Image (cartoon, rainbow, N blue to C red; front, side, top):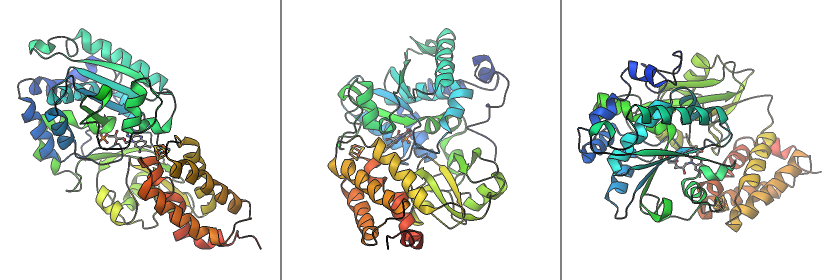
Amino acid sequence: MEKILTKNIDKPNSQDIEVYLADGGYKALEKVLTLKPEEVIDEVKKSRLVGRGGAAFPVGLKWSFTSKEDGEPKFIVCNADEGEPGTFKDRVILRNDPHLLLEAIIIGGYAIGTSHGYIYVRGEYYPEIEVLEKAIKQAKEKGYLGNNILRSGFSFNIQLYKGAGSYVCGEETALLESMEGNRGSPDCRPPFPAQSGFLGKPTAVNNVETLANIPAIIINGGNWYSKIGSPGSPGPKLFCLSGQVNKPGVYELPTGIPLRELIENYGGGVRGEFKAVLPGGVSSSLLTDLDVKLDYKSIAKAGSMLGSGAVIVINSDTSMIDVAKNTIDFFAHESCGKCSVCREGTRRAREIITRFANGGGRAEELDLLLELGEVMYDTACCGLGQVAMSATTSAIKLFRDEFEQKVRE
Ligand SMILES: Cc1cc2nc3c(=O)[nH]c(=O)nc-3n(C[C@H](O)[C@H](O)[C@H](O)COP(=O)(O)O)c2cc1C
Ligand code: SF4
């Protein structure tokens, strides 16, 4: 497949605006400025692009809702927090092709009808922050950002916000709270950010990779894009392959590629014997079927979620109790504490799993963990609490014997 998201990343000085311009950079923006905002949104709707940050929500719909909401000014916010363990794809774009992202955010701003764009970037991404700052300066100097862009009458600016190292601040409502200077804690929805977001105004929040698709959609058309990969969620996807594979890395491939092909043809095969995979980072459930297709619908049907595309491979030397312990330790640490079911649930689950890890598990507590996972899924306010138990409960369901061997005599 011809590369769309990573086509520029290996060019020398790929961050420089001259390199970006030499290969058609900012042409999509020039085209957009001759269209009506509704026409831009229609093209994105035709592409059937869905968000790559985890929730897979259709981008055209999100932009359409935001543009139609009452309330001024509106905002567009790029989510560059990239906190999900096993996810390291957005940084490839941030570090190597910042103008692709800036062009996409400006187009998004034009489409929803705002002059105000923000990038909320993970605070630890120091080199990426430097690259972005320089790129914003260059885009201003060339007239792609600022007042009256390319003499179109449209003005737009982008400001950077640096996160402070909290995983939950990648959740869009917590991210907006953090931008407002409040404690980074999610809000229960509705209202959604498209209705009431940054400073209570209509706000479109989009992931870096999601936005990076936009210039190609504008240049080649939504119909062209919709034919790439799986029809239900088309397009290229950046898969972050990690864990026990020979060649971990970020691979741009069409959605719907079988897991086996990703691991064997691109990842150089499993180190050791395949046992299971977390297809969407530590928030997803374990799968053992190598023939599952990597798209949102197929993975959901198989009982897990593709999320941000963090494919973590686990081999047969790995204890599933360790997998459960690692993931629940993470969620217990990152729970913001707002809902008791998540605050207490993750801590109690950590205590129980720790007992199993130390050989002192209680048999009846395995079913208790499964029940706790269901209650948290149904009642937690945000995605963190809803999926915090996914890896743990799927480990118990698929590898129960490993847990039973650790039951106290
Ligand atoms: C706990 C949690 C953490 C999240 N972290 C991120 C993140 O780091 N980056 C991201 O783009 N989306 C993250 N999301 C998803 C966002 O809430 C939101 O759905 C996304 O930014 C919307 O952009 P998209 O529609 O382009 O995917 C997270 C969600 C949850 C529940
Ligand atoms: S589910 Fe957990 S992380 Fe989300 S708001 Fe509730 S306590 Fe906070």
